[in-house]
Image (cartoon, rainbow, N blue to C red; front, side):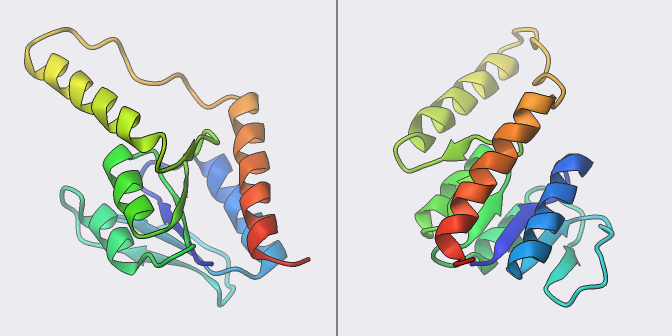
Length: 151
């Protein structure tokens, strides 16, 4: 299992949780972003800087993702593409995306895009990450990693 992180929008605290998990398990971890991402000097943890542009980082993650890899993202289309490749997908809030749930999430995203395009005022973005979100992410991550790594 390789852990791929859509790092342009992942909160720092989630990056720290991922680094600790990778250090503990030895699983390869790659942060993909269009800007530099600091990582510890460990061979299996790295960052991959891609060109700036719409979906460049997402496309690179999809290109490199393989069966049973783990993708960390809140981007619904990226989550759908990773699931199609047989990857596990987890949001920074600890939401596990699956083949059974991604269709509804894509529909809601498309509906909200249509609403914004028709001039309906935006209701604001998601609330800031809180302690419960962090715990849920760490718990879901541990569950996924426990299946991939024999301690």
